[in-house]
Length: 457
Image 1 (cartoon, rainbow, N blue to C red):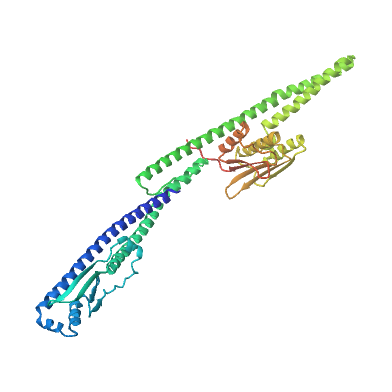
Image 2: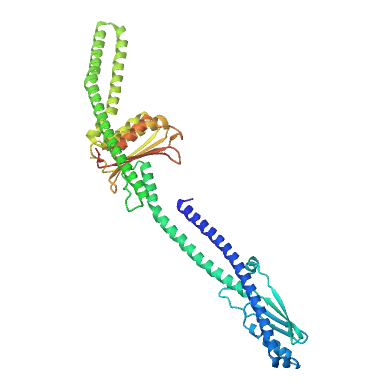
C-alpha cells in the first residue's frame, strides 16, 4: 500500500474510533439525561396534583359542586387540565364515574423518529405514580401519572444525529485535506524515485530536483543533487578516459598494422622470392629431391602472407579510411560471407552515415565487427541482418544487428567482447542494449550521438 494511502487509512481509523467513543459517551449522557428528566417530570406532576387537591379542599364552592351529579367529572377535569400540552407525562383519571385521559403532545422531528435500537440502548423504562382522589372525605377515584420518554428520546436522537452529521462532514473534510496535503508533500518523493530510476539506468544527466520543500525533504533533495552531480562528473571522466583508451588502442593497432606491413610483409615477400630462385637453381642442377620441400616452403610463405593481410584488415580497416563506413561494413560482411556461405547476410547502411566525427565511424565499425564475431562463433544463425541509420530528430546514429540464432543464455555472464563493446559505446556517449528476440536469436542495438560528449574535469 502506498504511504499516502496508509496515512489516510490511519487517519480514517482514528476518526472512526473517536466517533465510536464519542457516540458511546453521548449514549451514556442521553440515558442519564432522559432518566433525570422523566424523574423530574413525574415529581412535578405529582406535586401539581397534590397542589390542586389542596386548592379544591379549601374551595367550598367546589365541594358543593362535587355533591351534584356532574360535579366530580368537572372538578377532575379542572384538576388535570394543567397537564394539557405537556411533553413528558400521560395523565389518566380512573374512577366509578371517571375515565379521563391526557396524552403528551408529540414533537415533529427534523429527521425521523428515534429508531428502536436507540431507544433500546438508552433503555429508560416509563415510570408511573398513583394519586388517590379524595375530596371532602369522598373518594372520587385515582389519578395515574405515567412518564412518556418518547419526546425526550427524540430530542436526544435529534442532537445525536445532527452532531453525527456535523462530525461526519468534518471527518470527510479532514480526510480530504489530509489526502491533498500528503499528496502535495509526498510529490517530491515521486520525483526523487523517478530520478533514482534514471540514475539506476545510468542516466546521470537528469534534471536536478528543485522547488520549496520541508527541511527534511530539502536535506534529502540536496544530498541527491550532490550525488547525481558527482556521479555525472565521474561518468563524464570515465567516458573521456575510455575514449582516450579506445583512441590509444586504435593507434596501437595502427602501429602494429604498420609494423606488420612494413617489416613482416617485405620479409615474407623476400622469402617467397628466395624460395622461387632456389627452386629454379635446383631444377637446373638436377637435384629434384629438393623441389618438394622448397615448394612446401613457398606455399607456407603464401599462406602466411594471406594471414598477415587478414590480420591487417582486422587491425586497421583500410576501407574505412579510404572509402567510408558503408564500404567498410560491406567489406566486413563480404569477409564473413566468403567464410560462412551457409549464413545469409543482409547489410543496409542509410545515406548520411558517412563523414561522421573522428572516432565515431570506427566505433560503429567495431560494434558491427564484434556482433558478427559473436553471432558466427556462438549463435549458429542462418540469417544476420545489419542496419545503420541516422536519426535526424535526435542527431544519433542507430546500429542494429539481429540474428536468428540461439541468443544469450539466461544466466550467461558477459564476455570480454561484449564488455569492451559496451565500454566503447559508453565512451562515445551512446547507449547499448542486448536482448533475446521473441522469435529466437539476439538483437543488439546501439545509439551513438553524432556530437562529441562533453567531458567534465
